[in-house]
Image (cartoon, rainbow, N blue to C red; front, side, top):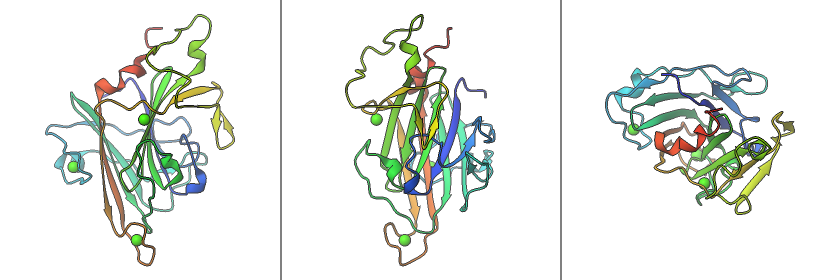
Length: 236
Ligand SMILES: [Ca+2]
Ligand SMILES: [Ca+2]
Ligand SMILES: [Ca+2]
């Protein structure tokens, strides 16, 4: 299936990288900066979003190769792969992540999860994109981003009148020293994707560094209806 969106996956393995987008991290997907492309298989049976990737559907799907550094393309130090499925209701994404010292601290929804080791998924439409991050506790941070040139002359004004740009938003023009050529965007942090379902399973001991852990798995269901706002600009 060809989706009308661009997807980028990232695993930020160092809190110091503190990324709001995959400018710092490991990436796959249809990233322009050297990531790969993976095909999404149609799921024929329901996916149970419990963090356990034991459905036969995941085994039949085509997994990505090792995620690579989105800046220089070098493979990550530890095993990290992702995969996609879809059905009429949702897009599904899963990750298998090797992690020798499982650590996560943030527990509040929409806390800055990029300060923990985390998984990040980005879905881009023409004029907006969706950012989803999870840590090993399963805490979710999700943000709807709008490129600010959409508000400019000749473009759609106030495309989302229900979202106030002055309330709990973030404004950036780049990340980690990289200035995006399109310039500024506004992130609506308080917005939550309708119907989003996520789950995480860890293999090892969380926040206990005296042993060696195996890693974690992540399972995500994103209802298509929740992505409606990303269709913005497609009629142009
Ligand atoms: Ca499952
Ligand atoms: Ca949110
Ligand atoms: Ca441990």
